[in-house]
Amino acid sequence: MSFEDLKLKRQFLRAVEDLGYTVPTPIQVQAIPRILAGQDLIGVAQTGTGKTAAYVLPLLQKAKGRQDGAPRIAILVPTKELAFQVHAAVMSFAAHTDLRALTLVGGVGPKTQIASLAEGTDIVVATPGRFMELYLKGALVLNKLHSLVLDEADRMMDMGFMPQLRDMLEVLPRKRQNLLFSATFPQRVESLADEFLLWPSRIEVAPEGTPVASVDQFMVKVPNIQTKLNLLSFWLCGKHVDSRALVFVRTKDDARKIRQALEKVLPGQVAEIHSNKAQHTRLAAMSQFRQGDVRVLVSTDVSSRGIDVPETEVVVNFTVPRMSDDYVHRIGRTGRADRSGVAYTMVDPTDEVALGRILERLPKGNRPESMSFPDQVEEAATPPWEAKTMARTIDFQRKKADPTYQGAFHEKKRKGEGNKRSKRRR
Ligand code: AMP
Image (spheres, rainbow, N blue to C red):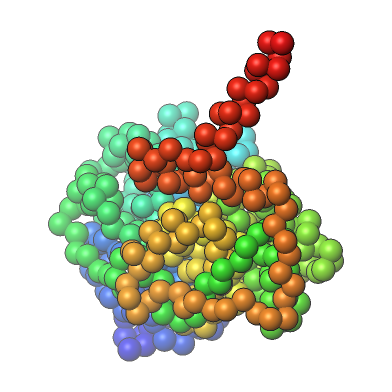
């Protein structure tokens, strides 16, 4: 099957060729003809499958060139980063057309976006909050809209965008084509699809929550943070010295500390990205990583959705994500569109519960393989403060699993607290 077989017009075949795509991916083969035929569609597909091109190409073809005035296509995404990325994809697929596209996202004042809308556009790529805000201000006119895409619908719902999506449903023209893409398809996304789509056909390119097959996954037990850093440096300065790597951490604090620690062994090669950073800083970090100016990007999950750097060869989970969907998404940052990648997950004693849950949900043939801790890497002793924090976390996890469990740790702590109080009283 070739792109010509999918009945794409010459200007889009040229764009696809410019991008170096030779054959369409499975989701493109399935989705493009259906979208061209005007069907509503649910696509259960992860990032990395080529889903963006699968919906952008046929929608652009159907738009048939520039029109003045209000947008005809709206693409809704959960995060700013993804909005910029989808916008960039739209621009490259539209390179040989005169179509115009705008990004409408929060984090910056709406003035510039309002002015750009006034000049007219064919396509908007937006986050739901800003989309509704601009509509309510009267800057975004929706009466010409005939195609709506909800991309990463599961994440949009996780991020609490349901009220904005509902409001949107009230104000969109009834007669329109709807496309919904989601990496997973839980009940709540199904309900959303029921509200938005009409007799959709559903296509699925990989079973729900399955990591991309072209990623080799490994997990390794590591006792503490310092040892994790030793192992990470060993990979990034040794085996993967020429690779672009994404390191996932849980909190923005961790992102900062780990970036600082890595800077010592890889000066000038590391950037960090998390939701607290100003938007321009985040975008700068991402584009540095994309262009290869920095080789390592340290990120929290919030930002991970927007990162599309096909050259990412290595993903390291510095900690096990607490949600199995996040695991699939994190490692989906590599092995994109049939490139191979490797994903490592470091597991410390506090990660065991989360890991168990993730393993349970992954299909048997697609779970990370256990690897032993490399001999060459120094295993640091766990400092007392870290041992204490870990013990506390594990105790908390056990208590959560079994409400009758009375942790020895808590007993001790209570006694200690009592002593302090009695001392004070004296
Ligand atoms: P997506 O799943 O849309 O996030 O796309 C993942 C990556 O695959 C992006 O870097 C695309 O540029 C790339 N891609 C999409 N379709 C193809 C294709 N047919 N051949 C090669 N690469 C592709």
